[in-house]
Length: 190
Image (cartoon, rainbow, N blue to C red):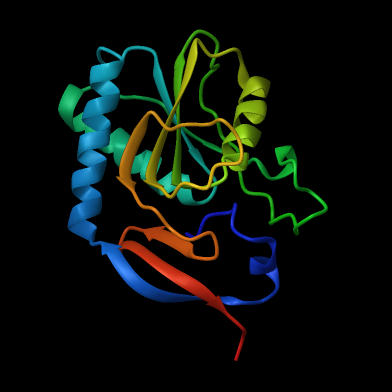
């Protein structure tokens, strides 16, 4: 899924044109495995953890991380989904995407929440996610895991767990899916 913090003109019917593949499926599996181990190490196990995938791109990543955590630690870590469309600070500047399901299976109060997304760009989606999380309890701590950190931050937000640091130009897009990570451009329809 291409990141939601891309340039506003990305919503005008343009299409993503892949240019360079930077990660293959095996690279993603290794990155997910490493990130899951780092999450367990930093938190001294899985006790009190909740992983929350940001709609849409972070959901499948969170599910993959939970699978590895279960395989490594034997613990069943709750996994939720979070839609931040109506918490964004750019409503009116870009179209609001169709609302996706938010499903947080446990009260977050006193737990360590690992927000999971596919791409970190400006940081505005994460800011919105932090606001949205507050509606589900007061977490003890919130950590951030992303598959790709592409830079260009507009807010002081930094990931705790990163699959790949990938410097990009601001006019490029990054697409992350189970089939890999691709850098591309926008093209007019047709």
